[in-house]
Image 1 (tube, rainbow, N blue to C red):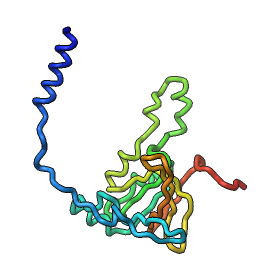
Image 2 (image 1 turned 90 degrees about the horizontal axis):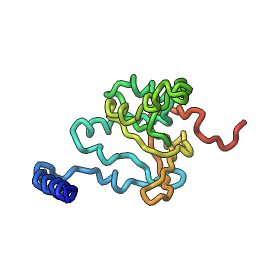
Image 3 (image 1 turned 90 degrees about the vertical axis):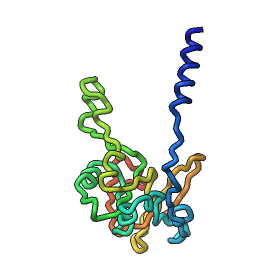
Image 4 (image 1 turned 60 degrees about the vertical axis):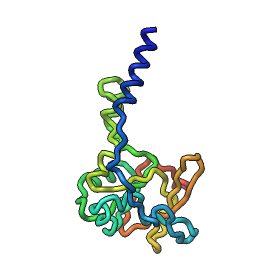
Length: 184
């Protein structure tokens, strides 16, 4: 009985504190972000624009800067992203993992002298400083002549989607964890 009163009280409190925010309006979204153009050698969608590229004046200015695509979230990628001037590029980071793992300290975590969460740094903490975007996927191919990276990603239905991400500058820092088709 007392538990039922407590739960009922919580729901009454929750309902009384709910306020609909009338200050939020429509968020401008580029039509190109919703329906990207197609092209490249395989006639795939080309992701030129992102949904949040038009949400503020700062984001609109950023989308017209040279596109820097960074493949991977390892040592080289994270060090470069942390030291990058935010006003220089429109950054897109592509990787199957959305975190950086500090591998030299893994033995300390396995024996319990260090917590595992101390070894992992989410990329979402690094990219906002440079107003960058993260795409969780794998770089499958690079067309250097067309300056396109072919990316495969799994959508919300669990099916694989392939698309291109254009670049002006490309940093390939995928590390040893990426699968190799034909190792030498």
